[in-house]
Image 1 (tube, rainbow over the protein chains, first blue to last red):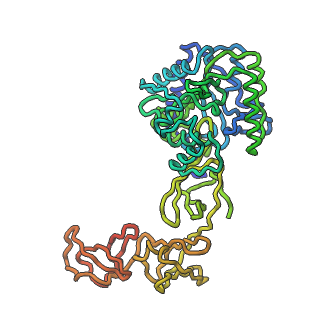
Image 2 (tube, helix red, strand yellow):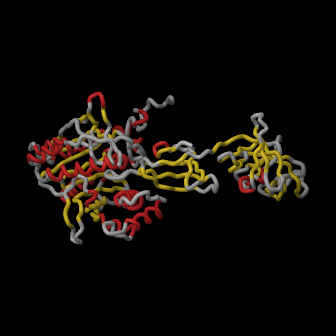
Length: 316
Length: 190
């Protein structure tokens, strides 16, 4: 420990900015009759996503939640109507300039909305915080075509591997398409997005659907009704036209768990209460999660998450 | 050597990449909200000096490189090798080839101490201190009192290196040289 480790890494101005942001968010949702809710940070179930590691709290035999998604969906199924939450989320091992293992998330759900209506509301919220700017909605396919000149849905895995190597020096030790697409997206495409505008990418590959509905696009490709928002090259929000089918939800959990086993990752309990809630009936809705620390980075013009978190993980 | 995972990559860690020893300079964690996490790593190839940027899947690992920096005294050259000796009293000698001393041949002075980098026990590179003191072997006669701003002339040092020096410098003067830029800093001891 050095002598200054007791001090916050964020300036007092950044802390005031955070307080003001929370007030603005609450005003925004109150005007729109979206109810603020609170759900547990400690839950019996973990995220099954192979790319998310839930922190386990062994004394309670529970897991810190990687997002409030499952619990909020149970509220939707219980008839809550439109809801939002500002809460901490936890992801093991995620630490860097834009990551802290404990971070603040804004998540909201809009019954009756599809993901396009929700994108419009996300844009309105950001206009009120960052000022008006152009909005561009780009299909995942088009974003890859513009930056890399390929169709990400059809390109050969070997072509993706060659591009990944060319741009990043990455040496593929397997032929996992999604790994290569994630690499090209995050390293090559993403830095070009959201320059002086809000860029929404949508129609993700069906293999990256997470908890979104899947549909067939005009080219006959199965795509996820999922969007991501990029501002100034930063990934800020991830939203879905939410999956409401309990059988499909169970199937996706099972696929995740099988993949975790295949990769030798820890087995985790899937959220059966979510499946039960979907069985009882969740309204058709769209939902989105937004990283508030990153939003504060944008508002403060900072390039490190340490500038907006009072005590990042190494000072916590 | 041990293997190091991407989350252990710290600045200064020495690892093997494509068989070459590299020193980690920067390690940035990059992860899409949904999807695979990566580490974008900048490292210096210690053989070539070139900086490499490589992206790894988070959790991938690289073998550590047996690289160590030691203080050694320069003894002599036999034309093929440059011989250095440990300063720890062991009198252990290490020959360095022309490639590994390429950056410092201009500044090598017998009995001076250099930082010698060993890779698997063999000399990989030799680095000079930031400043060295060397005798002028040849230069035009000094012009006493000529301190005209910016006027310089070439001087050949005992090592054979040529540096630009002020007009008043004479043969036999000991000069302080910045080895990073090869520039004259002043007369030693004055």
